[in-house]
Every structure is written in C-alpha cells, then in structure tokens.
Image (cartoon, rainbow, N blue to C red; front, side):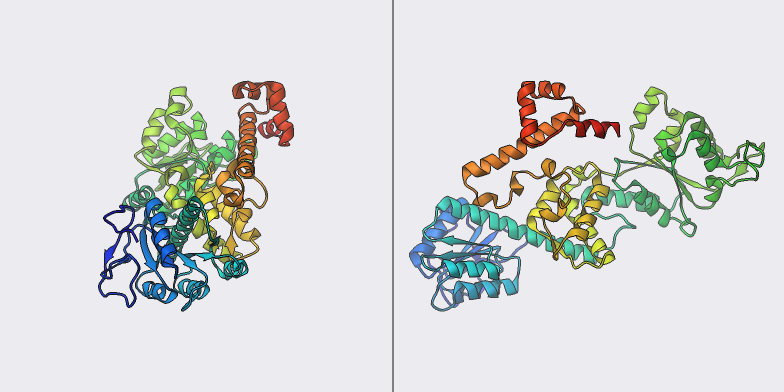
Length: 507
C-alpha cells in the first residue's frame, strides 16, 4: 500500500493498539480513526495481496480518501470494531470470512455503509445474491480502473448523503419547530432570533418575502410569543376583498351608513382590540384605505363608516407583502408615509434558493408531519430523491415543497420516497429531471446516455421558450435562433403544443 508520504490523497492516523493482524504495506502502528471532519474512509478487503496493493494504489491515486487495506475478512472485521468506513470494497470469496458475511456484519453496525462486492469468473450468481442482500454494487474481475473509481465515488456520495439524512432526522426529532417555522441555516436562524427579540413589544412589523416563504407563519410566531397571545390573531387577506367591502370589514359601520346597513357592524380592527392584526399583502390596499390605515397607526383609533366619532383601539399591527413597495411608492400606488409607519422593523423571509441547506431538513419535517397525519409508514427519502429536491427550482418556495412532500407521502407505495413518488403525477418532470436523474444513467452506454440527455435538454428548452413567448411559435423560434419549421419539427417530435402555453396565460 502507498503511504501518506508518497500519496497526498491518502490519510493515515496513529493507532492506539496494533491490530492483531497486519495489513500489507501499512505500518502496524497506523490505522484509520473516526473524526467529524475527516476525508471519506474506504476499507478494501482481498486475500490476494497483489490485487489488494494494486487496488490501494489505484483508488488512493484517484480518490481523496482515507484508505485501509485488509487481507482477510476477519482482519476487516477488526477494523470495523475501531471505525466505520463509508465504503467497503470486498472480494466475495475469502477463506476465513467471505464478503457476504462481512457485508452483513458491516450493515448491522451501520446500514449506511456502501458495500461493493468484487467477484471473479464463475461467481456472478453469488454477486447478484449479494445485491439482493444489500450490496450497493458488484464488480467483475478484471475491471476497468476508471469505472472502479467512478463506482467508488458514487458509493461515497451515497453513504455521505444517507448519513446526512439520518443526522437531519435525528435533529428534527430533537428540535421542536420554532412556532411553526422550521430551519437550521444561519439565515433562517437569524430570522428566528429577530422574531424572538421583537415579539413581546407593540412595534409595527413589516414582513417581506416571496410567495410561499412563510410570512404568515412568521406573523403567528410574533403573536404567539407576545403578551397578546391569549387572544386570537386576526388575519385579513387584503387582495381578496373589493375596496368598498374591505373598508367596512376593517373599520366596521353604523346602522344606516349605506343601503343594507340595517345594524351596526364591528370591524376587524375592533375585533382585534387587545390582540394582533395581520394585514396580508398590504401592497394591494387601495389608496383611499391607505389614508385611513395611516390614521390608525398614528392615532391608534378607528372611525366606522357613517360614524362621526372615533374609537380608541389597542391593536398591534403586522403587515406582509411579496411586492416591491419602494417601486409602488415611485409609481404613486402606495403612500410613502404609510410605508415608513409600517416599516418600523422589517422581517425578511428568505426564498428557498437562498437557504438550500434547509431543503432536506424541511423535507424530512414535512415527511414526518404527513406520515403521521395520514398514517403512512413512510420514513425516508432515497439519496437521488433528496438530490432532486435540493436541485429543483422552488418558485413556490416552502409552500410548494410542502405540497410536493404531502403528495409524495400519499402516493408512495413503500416506506421510502423516490423520484417516481415526487413526480408521480408527471407535473414538472420534463422541467426538473436532469441527466443526473436518468434511471441507471451510469449503466448506459455513452451514446444511449447522450441521446437521453439531449432529449431532456431539448424538451426543456422548447418548453421554456414557449413559456417566455406565451405560445407564440414564431417568436420562440426567433429567440432560440432556430428556423420556424425546425422549431415546429422539434415540437412535434416531443409532443409539445403551443396551445397549452396560451391557455395557461389566459387563465
């Protein structure tokens, strides 16, 4: 085996007590130890010492890893008592302990370990049996060195992802949601800290963020952590109500104020007296109501429609928006003085693309939530499903992710969510599945893999061009730099119709 001095990619650590059996090429006062920030550890096991040394050189040269060589199954078992590697590459037939027995022992200690079985001529059936028993892959001797390194790297990635998923599951079990909000990234933790600091005050808060980022959850956290939490928070969806109805809903009216006002009506501000009111999507409030709202914030009083008297109220005002208020001020559709009254303190809810490290954490949170709610025995995601979730563009942010996981839990037929469950209804598959997600991609020949990748790319490209032009084929062809007839041929080949993009726009 190559040593640390002549191979910078390999890392050896001092041994507290020498192992009972020596490893070829390795000093007996060295072994691999487990530590949190180490490089991936690979254990190679083969009773053919020449093959063992060769494997150590090939993998050590091409992979950044900590490497342990063992010349027997029992020696490998001793290594497992001291450290759990990410990957075990083991021969299947060995005299003292065969590779299948070693794999069973390793997976009992840690099911996330990726075990690759090496087999010679005449033992293919045994290797296939090993796959059924839980081996990650098998290689038939003699094998191509580049393919060997590729399989090793892929198996390392799988184990690291599985261990990260287990860590997230454990962390979710140990950590309660922050009043409905979930996350562990520094960015979202700063939001939690800000909410904690300002919750038990009467200061007006403007909550900003894209659609689906959890603005209402942030408002509810502010309310629940305040001294007003004994009374329910009142939430108003401002764009859902026409101007004349919104005004009467907010401020109330007296009998006879208008036709049909047969009795006094208490408005939502009065309903929220002593509590909190959330004005959701405040950017859409008409200017006439903005003027009245400014008075509420300045004087802490309201005047119902048709009344000549104002009523003092004790209400904390929270407002949310997914729009650019500064632009609306420049356009003249939002009052600047109201903006400054609302914007005493701003809480910004980050989009998922800025907290990608929280995607897997959120996915497991929703998995546990909906598995319990719908009584489904779904416990985890496959590594490629997590990869897909982390790489996907979440235009709807946390809300879209939440709905995706809910659907996957309901449609999953086993205890693990895979790509097929995430895209079970076919929506978004053409847009989101990339070449990394082509089934058995690594087992395809170069030409077949290339055809599938080009097919996915072309379908994505044509669809996105039509989305940009709302179904205008001529314009889509122009921006793509393709002749219109060629563009139409591609549309026919992939079954894409311009009508679906025009109908989407009309709706």
